[in-house]
Each structure stands twice: as C-alpha cells, then as structure tokens.
Amino acid sequence: MSDNIQNLQKSLSERLPQCSVKIRKHGGVELNSSKENLVGVLAHLREHFGYRHLSHISCVDWLEQNQFELVYILWNYESRIQLFVKVRLARENGSGISIRHLWPQADTYEREIAEMYGLPFDGNENPRELILEDWDAMPPMRRDFDTRAYSKEAFYDRPGREDAKDVRSVISGRSGEEIPEIAIPYTRK
Amino acid sequence: MEMNDKDTLTIVEHIKNFARRHSLFVLAYGTGCGAIEVPPTMTSRYDAERFGIVGRATPRQADVLLITGYLSVKTLKRVIRTYEQMQNPKYVIGFGSCTINGGMYWDSYNTIKVLDQYMPVDVYINGCMPRPESVISGFIKLQQLIKAGKADGWKKYQENLDWYRTNQKKVIKNWNMPDYNW
Ligand code: SF4
Image (cartoon, rainbow over all chains, first blue to last red; front, side):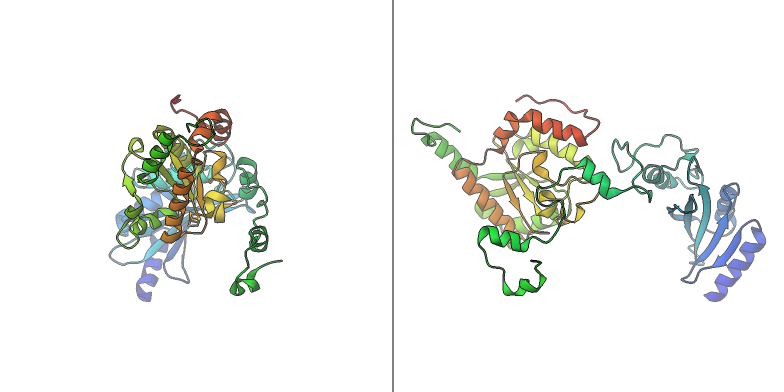
C-alpha cells in the first residue's frame, strides 16, 4: 500500500510539476494547486490517474491569512487512495471556478459553499439557495460570524433562561419538589 | 366555548369536548430529533391508540400538531402554514427542550428558541428527548385541558393574530403565504 502511495506521489510530481505533492500522515495524498491550474489539474487527474469520483468539496476559512481554502476530495476505485486537491483563494471578493462540467454533482457543493461562506463560483452564477432561506446577514459559516449574537438578536429568549444555566434548584423550590439524592451533586445552588 | 348563565360549560359543550378528547387525530409530521419517539408511542408497545390518539395524513384531517423538536426558520414557515390549514378546534403540543427554550440549539443562528412566540402551544413536554411515557402523559394532560375547556390556543391565535404575525414576520423575511381568514 505504501509503495502505491509513493509511486503515485512520484508520478504526480512528474506529470504535474506546477503543483506540490505530499503524502499525508493519516493516509492519502495532498496536492496544492493554484487557482489558474485547478481545472486543468482536476481534469488531468480524472482522465489519466483514474480519479473518477468526486467525494466532496469542502471549504476552510483561514481568517488570519484572509484566505479561503477549497479542498477537492477525490477517490480512485482501483488504487483506493484518496487525493486532496487544495487551492487557496482570496477571502474578500475572491471566487472559485466551477467544475460542473467535470462532475455534475459539484453543483450541490458549490451552492452550499456559495451560501454558507459567500464565496461565488465563476461558471455557477446566481446559484439557487440550498439550505438557508431568504438569508440576508453574513454567510453563517464564516468564522467572523457570531452565531450567539445573531441568535440573541433574531430570536426570543425564554424569560429567566437567557443565561442557559442549571435551574434544578429553582424549579424544585417553586414546585416544592425535593431534589432526588442522586441529582444533588450535579445541582448548582 | 359556549357558556351557560352560571358561567360553566353547557351540556352540549361537554359532549363535544368528550368527543374531542377521545379522538385526538395527530398530524403525521415531524421536525427535529423528536419524531423518532412518535413511532414507538404509536405502535404496539405503548399503543397510543388506547387513548384515541391516531395518526392522520393531512392537516385538514388532524386535530393535534406535534412540534417534535427544534424548528429552523425554514421549517417554521411550513409549520405555520400547516397549522393554519388545520380545522378548529386544533391543539399544539411542543416536544422537548428545543421548543421550550432552545435546548441545545439555544445559540444556533437558524433555529427559533421559544415556540409560543410564534404559535399557541397548549402542552409542553420537557425532556431531550421525552420518552413515550412522557409523550402519553402529555396527551393525557391535553385531554384534561380539553375536558376543562382550557385548551383554547386556537382561539388565542385568532384573537391575537396580529401579535403572532408580527413575531412570525420578524424571522420569516419573505412572507409569501396566503392569508387565511377562517
Ligand atoms: S430537545 Fe433534544 S431531542 Fe428534542 S429536538 Fe432538541 S436536541 Fe433533539
């Protein structure tokens, strides 16, 4: 198995010299591409390396570097080695490139990323909303989105439960009920 | 509720309430994790049909709407539409801490926290998730309320429709639903 991975790494670095290839500690091979090369690299992997299956596109928010990272996770049914193709994009006003022509199912992932991270894809303009409905605040999966503040603003709190603390003693005091012995160690006074 | 001159329920109303509380038809609709507890409640082990609790397929046939857990804003829109399509009298049961105070989704950006701000709730069942026993005890509580003529959430909804609408429209931004006027 490790031989296979080493061979794959070697042939990948020969065939795709514009990308850096490395073996991941927990299995699989990682390939860093630039945005310009991405579609060519993916098409090449698909045609010549047997990576016919796109498992997932995920997005990582590198807030500190002001970048988004897209990870295309590919699978080869013959060699059974997973491949991660990574590309870094500008976080503000950046855009990815749609690969719907290679894998139609990429459409779903691109819609999700566009909705949850606010990252548009060239070639997939104005995608329909996928999970959220009529969302007009900051895309919620961005790391600088404060979900607690948003939910405080948008939804009502149950009066007296804003702090979400343990209320066993209060409730038992109100109803005159005794706290069972087993629960006493876990009850805040 | 029709009252007589002594300010108690009329005989006719008693008979109606008797019929209502022994034929609670539940809409087969589930949100959140809680819908999982409904099949065991309905099937042979706990057999809710003993109490006249039966599933029904469409809102027009149902009396009880179970809100079985957290409601995302998107689901809330469908739930309100469903609720408004149901025939009077109709009852709402809120399952689990998510409908009471948000539960473990209390700081989520996309789930409402307090259900009774958006629709009238007759009975809450606490727990995360309530077991079938507590579900049945919630139904019994609802039957008692109906018997006493106190399960009148549907009336409150009609009377305070503006207040509910304001709250609903606060979270549902694109209100493109028909207006029912009963
Ligand atoms: S109360 Fe618990 S079980 Fe019920 S919907 Fe919320 S998280 Fe799920």
